[in-house]
Image (cartoon, rainbow, N blue to C red; front, side):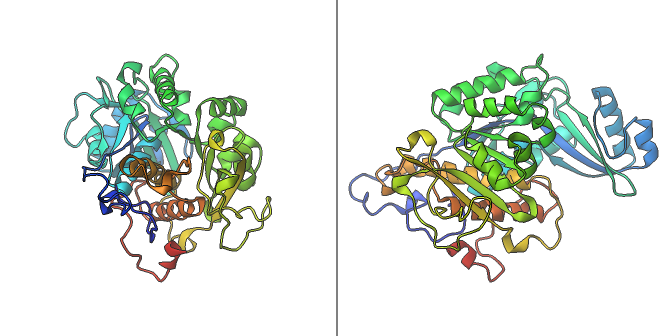
Length: 434
């Protein structure tokens, strides 16, 4: 596993460097590995430039997002191919993107549960999904289905307006028996999205998610929920509050989803309110940057050396150098907050806003998995005297998540094609060393 983020570390990581305290005490052994796992509605994002006439013919309302049936999706896809109108086909899905980016950053294994066409033809959208997914993402547990996987058509009109046509296919037909208990119990985290819980109740996806959560909770594996969209949350905020309180360890959201969930438009207050229901919150806030909130035992609090920040909670970043802990692991829980502005002020040109939040979450997951990796291989390290949830401090996780989000914003695809550069092509290297 690669080290999470560009920093000079006072601890021994990767563990092949060997902790001097452990040298001579135990014989050299091969490093033990860990992984994270996630459940997703597997789909492909298909982008094409089309005429208004085509939109009218397929009864698609310009600028809206609509569900279409499999027959219409098949006909649309064939017409786009014949007319050579498709500009790109990217593997998509919130969790699929997150796992891909995690594996790209960490150079470590992740496991995806979902469905895949049982007959994959070269050049098809299912083939594109496999080609555009990191080889470090284990797809061996995908459940074969006779029908199509999900497709999201992003149809761009001459005026630049985007119209979305979504074909669900069999993406919700993941059955509970396809969830591997051992994989979840041995993982560093289980990652799910709110989209999964709006699946057709007659399909198997909801039951599969419930089963996976039960396995994770029984094994004390952190459950990570990414919210997806405010329109889904605002339909029944109380349902989501109850669900999070009963099942979720870490919550990832943007400021709009935070407002739908908590009623607070201020992302800091939304994150603070969310700590009623979970142990840790990552809240992206567009041009404002991103916030983190969580808990740390009073005994392990570390004061920041950075400027104290004003806000709805005065000097809220006072303890941002502390490491996150579960509320239940704290004898005297203290709320801790951190914030960071966009890296380098944000990209000069934002090429893609889809996936920036998923990129930030993948960085957090890398740091979370790094803790388990380190603990498996150097259990006697002083790093583990504290019952932490992550390897690093709130502040450092903010920097790492922020840097990854910047990288996603700077490219067309929500999926990273490579990890972060070893050295930055800027004078801001001190950003990582503070």
